[in-house]
Length: 337
Image (tube, rainbow, N blue to C red; front, side):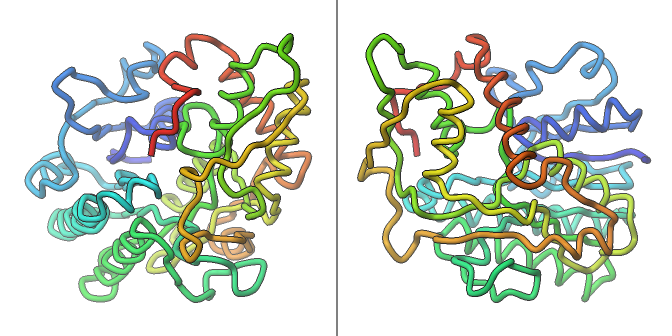
């Protein structure tokens, strides 16, 4: 692959994507959020052989000048920079508009002006809202149930409109509930694992605090999501289109917690904590991905499919969180929106 810009490169998925691109020999420019402490997010922990081969630029996705400077000379743009926490979007919706909508506008405008060969924009399954039919294909109505999801609908449409209006070669990748090492503790799988890892089995069954446990999700292991981004970037089949990235397997949050407890050898008691519940009309009750279009247009299929694949992905995630150094930045006793 030619010179690639990855926005949101210090984040959960972005850092994995940068590492994979570097391992594959790509010329990578990683755009990370500016921090006065000179933090590069999860890239701080990248192997020396990765850091030696990539270029890191710090900036702000909301700043059109910074985005344009970072993109200069790149032929492919993988745009992942976003605010993603749903609970925080209830508290700071304007920040989500600025980052997710305006940030995406900055990316596609710069890509158009600079003649970039491919833009892969990151969407989310949250834009569908609670499934009106399953599995959810790309024709499913958009029904955002949170300010976060609404800004992602806006960002998606900005990106696609540039393709229609100016011929900008945009593909929208729509991942379903990516999980794996480095994921934020706001997400349910790290929340479960970190609480169980902090439990002393001598104190009896582990009591963990969760929100709603009946909703179902289609959890996608991070290496599969990364593979989906790369397939979209390298294929002409989905330019101007949207592709779902998911496993075509749904499981409830409660069953997910029990599966993790079984893998960790812990007896589990789930307690509902009101502060973790979404407003009733904002809770997405069911997400289940139809991934046939990704197979047809970009040749992508998940390596961690079905319950067996989900358990393999969970085992890898649990192993990562089992290392105290990896858990050091997580506060299992707090609920951080």
